[in-house]
Amino acid sequence: MNILVAGGAGYIGGAVTDALSKQDHHVRVYDSLLYEEAYRKPGDFVFGDVRDYERLKPHLQWADAVIWLAALVGDGACQLNPEISVEVNQETVRWLADGYDGRIVFMSTCSVYGAQDKVTLDETSPTNPLSVYAATKLAAEQYLAEKNAIIFRLGTIFGIGDEFSRLRLDLVVNTLTVRAWQNGKITVFGGDQFRPLLHVRDAAQAAAENVTTTATGIFNLHRQNVRIADLAYQVRNHFPDVVIEETPMKFQDSRNYRVSSTKAREILGFSPQYSIDAGIEELKVLLEANRMRDLSNPRYTNQAFLSRNGIHKEVARRVMAEVGQ
Image (cartoon, rainbow, N blue to C red; front, side, top):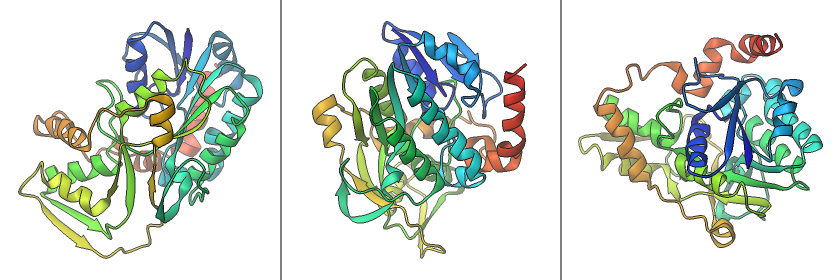
């Protein structure tokens, strides 16, 4: 099967291409290298912005299936420029749905549920997007409703995807692990908020396994629902001398939700393999070996990198110009 991975150079994309490499597929990555200087993995690569439809079209014609990871990810990152976030996250998927009839694997987010702290949410639960990011993902889901598409609402990702792709340090498990190692202290604001957590390689494996299935529709994917305060103490198990400081919220974090992945387990056989402890430990190994030179580098954080580089206004236009040459 010919598989196009749109956004395949990213945090999840690197793990997806690794998972696909273990199967008998022809894989092509299409990516604008928004956060990267180069694509160093072996294999077929095309530099391009998903908003450049003329450039993207022949690669979709080649593909029997597409795994669509291309997106601006995160509440803060999307809020920097909502207009471009809508273009990238939402309108490109509308175009894909209108013009592509192959198999589609689409990554959405459990953030579409918003604040619903009294119940465990399944795929039939009401949605309540509280950010541009969540709203664009929900709109994209709706465009794919009548397609041969499987939609994964991912929990909060953690861990290390592969050896090549950028590591994100703006995700709660990774963030707390770095703070524990670097500062010897974790400050928890509030802490009663729940997050559904999922290792990046488990998310990638689900995408790779279901590119050839006939399952369609929406599936929650998570391993464990964890209260943020409890997660801090779990991180401390790996750094026994760490001090945990709990303080009241300075602002209202309205994201608070627990999800069920029963549907994915029963229909798809979804069985996540990587625990939270495993994700903490693999990042701890990198940190203790000093394999990350500058943890304050904005490239590890979506919002900080995009904000510092004016990516939504300047670099996005430059990418489009370069692709058009």
